[in-house]
Amino acid sequence: MKSELERIHREAVAGLEAASQEAEVEALRVRLLGRKGELTTIVRSLRDVDPSDRPAMGAYLNEVKTDVEQRIEAAFLALRVSARERQIASERVDVTIPGRRQVLGHLHPITQTIEEMIDIFVALGFEVATGPDVEDDYHNFTALNFPPDHPARDMQDTFFVDQDHLLRTHTSPVQIRVMENRQPPLRVIVPGATYRIDNDLTHAPMFHQIEGFMVDKRVTFGDLKGTLTLALQRLFGDDTRVRFRASFFPFTEPSAEVDIGCVICAGQSSTCRICRGTGWLEILGAGLIDPNVFEAVGYDSEALSGFAFGVGIERVAMLKYQINDIRLFAGNDIRFLRQF
Ligand code: FA5
Figure 1 (cartoon, protein in one colour):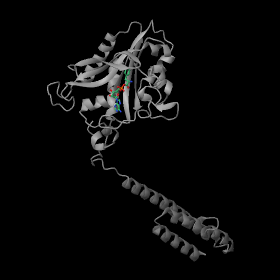
Figure 2 (cartoon, protein in one colour):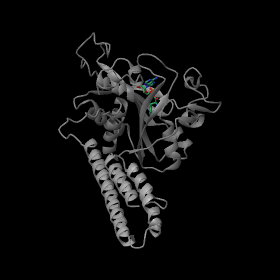
Figure 3 (cartoon, protein in one colour):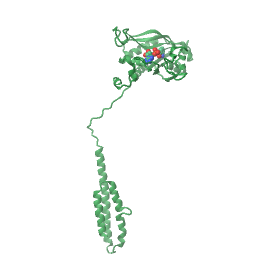
Figure 4 (spheres, protein in one colour):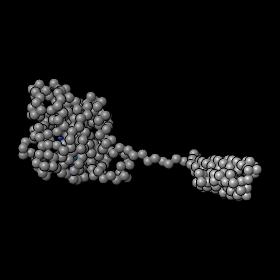
């Protein structure tokens, strides 16, 4: 039995020294100390030993068992420590390596222009409202005093969804939606996407407008002029000249087209390509809200008055940034967008 114990001890020591994985140590532990392990079973053969040798043999057995247990414990500990050291080494961070540059995106130039214009009008006491892109004929045309045979109702100009629904051709239907639900005094702006069957250097099938309107007692054309002149000068610079020309919209009376002094040549060049030598650039449509529009929303058109205007955002952005092709805004060319 002694020689058997010596063999087990020798092999245990050698096995533990060779083990490089916790799993190997665990296998050895099971082989030696498990329920059917070599050291566990050899205890049972102690009863076959001559009684006079039994105390000495028992003591030796205990010595071997204790030693093996301690070596296994130590082997586990050593492997865990070296595994942790390897992990720490592999996760080491070199704080001296220069950081990776984060490429920051930015807002689209149209969004930037919309936000700038919202800020200008909010500072003048206007609030922001929105409405649906898919509109019904009533809000887009009828309530805005378009006669039944108006050319804008032609399939040539308007994207119809079905008999009664269309992609709104302007932001003016939101005037109706706000007035249907609220009572004056109102000062509201409406930024949003608008759609028309158009496609050339200055007209896109989808573009953006900002509608603005004010309704109260005794709102005058002077209020419209003052508000728009101030807003356009904040947008294009304090020296910007603004002029109003008589025009026509079904939903305003009187109506005006508003021009700003050419931002390129300031009226100094008879060959300017932007203003074609006129010195003026058309920028928006406006007017005093037609009494028929007030009637459509149930307002008292005798007691109330109001102004409204609609600006093309792409138009503003093209003039501000001197862009000559409207299609660049929707082209998603990163080389174009990076410039803003
Ligand atoms: C209107 O849309 C009116 N609703 C504006 C208005 C509102 C007038 C309130 C009075 C009171 P107009 O069709 O002119 O008007 O369009 C207004 C602006 O939208 C134009 O000056 C132009 O800058 C822009 N616009 C029109 N069509 C396009 C298009 N296809 N692409 C880009 N911009 C366009």
